[in-house]
Image (cartoon, rainbow, N blue to C red; front, side, top):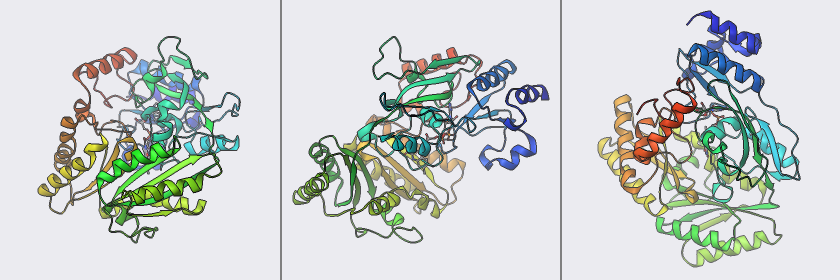
Length: 458
Ligand SMILES: Cc1cc2nc3c(=O)[nH]c(=O)nc-3n(C[C@H](O)[C@H](O)[C@H](O)COP(=O)(O)OP(=O)(O)OC[C@H]3O[C@@H](n4cnc5c(N)ncnc54)[C@H](O)[C@@H]3O)c2cc1C
């Protein structure tokens, strides 16, 4: 690769918009160290020109947002150019009547949430990485998070998009309408495509009315059968206000409530399962009703113990322990899996995987938790001194049982590089062939995030 492309890119984004050589190495985290250059365009026109130049030169481009993705989709290699959206971080004023917020793709989730809140509205997609994840990255991964059971994933909360294709073509699809059946809804092609079909530059977010308040509780359950029954019961009784149903297996709960973790156990640590449940609503007697519903569930033997948050501070403390996933890393490097399957199959699946892993590595530890209200379980596995071959074997033990259960190897994090070999477990050959056809049609030279999600050939 010569310097001509670097000069062209510098000419497009200006000296402050391009990092290469020592400057780049000084800035980057280890896993993104090996890029040819990092460009930081400040507008859609600049993104378009950057992509057109790289396309003409046949150089691969890797879009990067907040780098919170968990499947290495944004990790670059030495011959690739990183396209960071960090300078495209402008928000337009909230349109209160239409209940939309137009934002550039580099806006951090927390900032979009704050803008909606300041206008008395809510952007309901929320996740632990809210302080770093960008809207563009969230669109690209179809991010889910903590309130999917009530509000859906990014796909359900985006009205329109502006995307730049691999050759620099700008596709403006900035729809602001709730209903628009005028032909194909092209935004859905790009939502969840992990930067392989286009670079998201602007987003029209769908906002909704902010709930007047929320009620949060931590419940302890003695068996998994009760988890499914409780979900059904709460969802029915709360009449559409159930906004979170997060389940923690006992060993996960123990880790996040034992020093050096900050949280102390709000409930004793010897129950089999813990459920963080939340209802968001507008009625003034909601707290009483919430308490009554939980009390009924206890009387029916579904809940063994419970604590209801009495203040916003207590509510945040309950969420903080659920979100303290960093504690899982204190035993050494982790393999983290993001599985989707039928709720009824989940406990058996987790125990099957735990048994097979511990038969292979007796000192291995597995901890499970996740958005079980959405059928999404996160499985975190620590195998002492795990090497690359161990990791491949571990992946097989975790993913193979999913095929018989019609489960998915990714619930919300995406495929990236990490799960590409396993995509065929969750998709049919016809689906894979159509994915390839789309990739080849939109990016015939294979320069946009190549090697992620699908290969250019099956
Ligand atoms: C503590 C923690 C908690 C998390 N919790 C959740 C959760 O509950 N739910 C969930 O879904 N995820 C969760 N994640 C994963 C992560 O936050 C999401 O995948 C998020 O959407 C990634 O956004 P990002 O801006 O960091 O993207 P990046 O990590 O930078 O990129 C992710 C992918 O998107 C592509 N991309 C980035 N920006 C663009 C763009 N503008 N156009 C096209 N492609 C682009 C990249 O090439 C890459 O393939 C969590 C992560 C952490 C660290």
